[in-house]
Amino acid sequence: MSDLFEWRQQKFIGFKDSPLPPTGPGSNGVSEEQLDHFGVMADLAQKYNLKLIVGLVTGWMSGQLHVPPALEGKNILTDPESLMWQQKLVTTFVSRFKNHSAIAGWDFGNECNVMENVENYAQAYLWSSVISGAIRSEDKTRPVVSGMHGLSVSDNGQWRE
Image 1 (cartoon, rainbow, N blue to C red):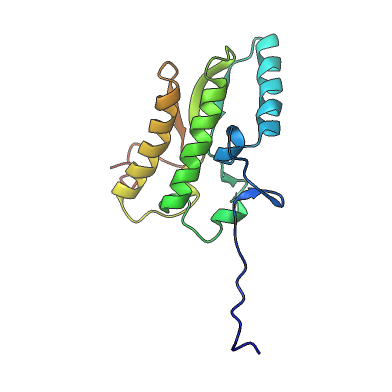
Image 2 (cartoon, rainbow, N blue to C red):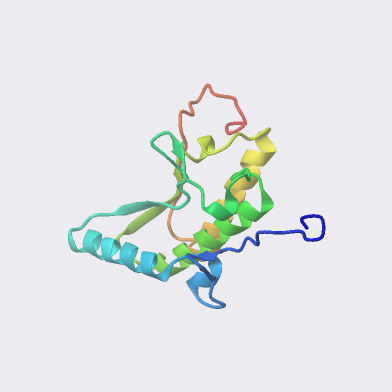
């Protein structure tokens, strides 16, 4: 009987067991609930006169890669679908908080250069350009910084050329 039927597991991008909503932040894969949580934290920072530099794409933490299930198996830094979703995340997030007075700047994220290997300078450049372009498309007023891991002036690898 297995010769007669081809079974496929359909993969969709969504929240829990539901597809993404057609409008709002959810349509870009961003949880409204989590945006609200960040808003509370930003308000508290403002209340206590703290300034935030917000890391936007943080897939690498404590020596481990954290990737949404829909992007597992893809190179996070070079795969077109991955780049598209990162761009949507960044534009949605920055658009939502660009006028918050506690935010002093935007950071690519935590040690993004170790999330995956890139083959050459052009791949590193493209990822950086997509993320910085997404930030700049929503907020031209704040600095954009890069919290890359282990780069130095003498490093002439793919992220420094």
